[in-house]
Length: 446
Image 1 (spheres, rainbow, N blue to C red):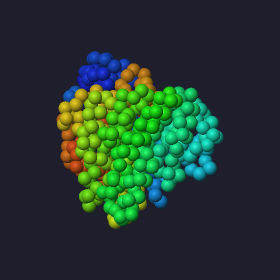
Image 2: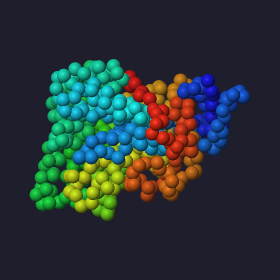
Image 3: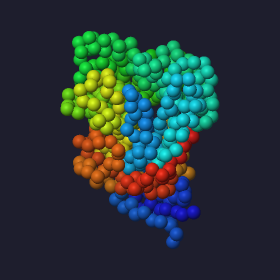
Image 4: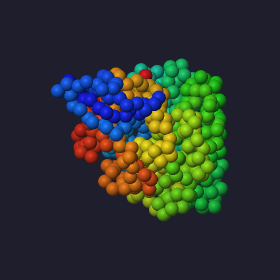
C-alpha cells in the first residue's frame, strides 16, 4: 500500500500551529512528527513555507432540493465537485420528507441521489411533519448513522413547520437516544405579523424580504428552544443564526450549539437595494452591520461553535427580476468559497488560525459524531488534508471556481484557495472530475 509523506510543512491544529511532517498510508494518517523517515517507495510532498489544514466539514448543505417550483442549482455531483475545489472534503446534507413518506424512505432516497458524490458525505434527517410513527423511526435512523434531526419553527405555508409543543416531543425522543436536534429558528407568528402589513401596502421588492422576517422572530424562537433544551435535556443545534438578538438569547446556554454562515458575517441588508438584490434573498435574511459585528465577536470569543454555508445556490435565471420577494427561491451558494474566503478574512483580520480549524473542522466533526475519523489531522484519522500558501491571497477570481452557477456572492472579497486537496489519501483535482467519478463515501455518525 502506497505511502505519502508531507514534509517540511506547518500543521494548523485546533490547539496550535506546529512544524510537523505527516505520513499517510492508503486512506489514513499513520504518523505525525518531526523529520519522519521515508523509503524509496514513499511519495514526498514538499510543504516548505506552506500550511497544512484538515479537510473542511460543511455541516449545512442542500444539494438539489425542491424549492418554490424549481430546484437548487447543484446536485450531489456538481455541488461536491465545487466543495472539493474549495477544500471541503465532507458535507452534511439533509433528507427531504415527502408526503406519506417514512423517515427511512426519505433516507434511502437521499442516499440514492448522493451516489454521484465526489466528496464524502453524511446526512441529517428532516422532520417536516409530526406523527407518532415518525418519532418511532428516530432510533432506527440513529442506528443507521444519522444522529441529527432538523425541524422548522416556520414555513407553515409550505407544510414544514412543527409547533413548539411538537418540537418538545421530538426533542424528548432524540434526547433519549443521544441524538441532536437541529432547528431553523424563526418564530412563524412573528413573521406573519410583520408580513401582513407589507403585503397590504404592496411592498414586494427584495429589500422588504428582511423586514418581513425581523430579528425578533429569531430571538423569540431561540428563547423557546432554550426552554425546550432545559426541559428535555436534548442537545439543540441552531442553524444559520444571524442576529445579535438571537445570539444573545442562545450564547452560553447549556446544550445549545450555534452555527452561523459567511454571508451573515460579510454581507448586510444594504445589498437588497442593488440591481442583483434578489440574488441575496435567503432565509433568515441578511441583517444590519451591527449584527455582523456581534457575530464576529461571537466567532472570536467562542460563543459561536461552527461555520456552515446553508449552501443552496441558484443561477440568475432562477431568480427572475421583478417578481415579489416572497416568490423568489430562497438560498445562496457557498460551499466552494467557504474556506478560501474565510481563510483570507482570518489573515486580513490577524485572527488565530487554530480557531478557524476548530470552527470548520473539529467542532462539526465532534458535534455530529464524525470525530475522530474526520475533523483533524491525527494518527488514525482519514487523510483529508489541504496544502495552502497563506501568502497566495487574491482578489482575482478568474478561473478559480468550478461551480455550475453564473453568480456568486463572494467574488468581491479576497480569497486564498488551497494548492492541494487530499481526500482519504488521494490528491483531488476537482476541475478534471467527470460525472462518472464517484469518490465519495457515506460516513456514519455516532
